[in-house]
Length: 358
Image 1 (cartoon, rainbow, N blue to C red):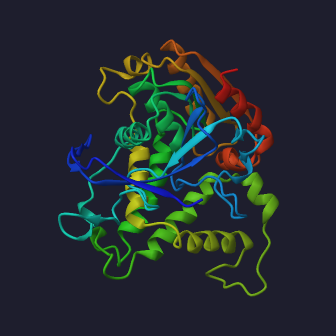
Image 2 (image 1 turned 45 degrees about the vertical axis):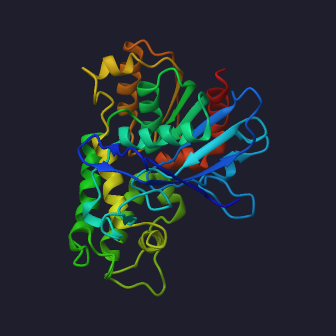
């Protein structure tokens, strides 16, 4: 199946939370499974930071949730009708900084407005309206996708029955914001960045590659890296380069990332992650969270080095104090933050029960 595209906000522009407007927003999306006659089996999948609209392929390629999705699996395509779209600000088909600005005929670049999770959710809601989906069985998301799922439950409390938030707190920690700052600075200070207007020249590949290497260290665990690489060295390694195997692995991940992601999108989405505040538009966070009516599943991984257990505990406490029907689970995994993408055995039951409302 190929990605589908639709242009939204073509008659009325989207007013951005932090200022500015966007019109003629292209949204890349994909659907899986069949919408039943009652239209009560639709599930929205919200992807993580660098994900896209294609968590699953049926032609042998690997989607980002490939091993979780399919007939009879946790994300059961025989049971549910799944909808997934690339987020606003992305670079996988949905309008973002690399898209053509209809007013100039050139990529938006530095002129792309700042985005927050609330803006992303508004675009997803417009997509569902376009598809004729008036209610969802569930919304599921991990990491940045969990923030989107949480905001959906606040802004449209009657729209879904269940929320499944995997490895995401409702606020990003100071340490995590610090990691993102270093990653952004590596991109911004690349000599090819040109203030974000690099599309007619050389992209800031070196800065983006370094940023990705640092990001990978927050997604993994020391235990996993020790098992995979230890202190092993490369026979042909450079003393100041990829001398250790772990260094070679990180360099490979940084270079591989350049094939599929845009530096400006990375900057905008990292900042949207930092800026997430569910209380925007409401008096305070408890007022915002008290709007949630959906049954809420929250899953924490004890070894997560990005969304740490203490951040998930604070989220758990705030949700409970706000009267949310919360079901909280916690377990260890060698995979750390990336566990929700790869550790099927640990997550399978929580996803199944969360989607079904059991």
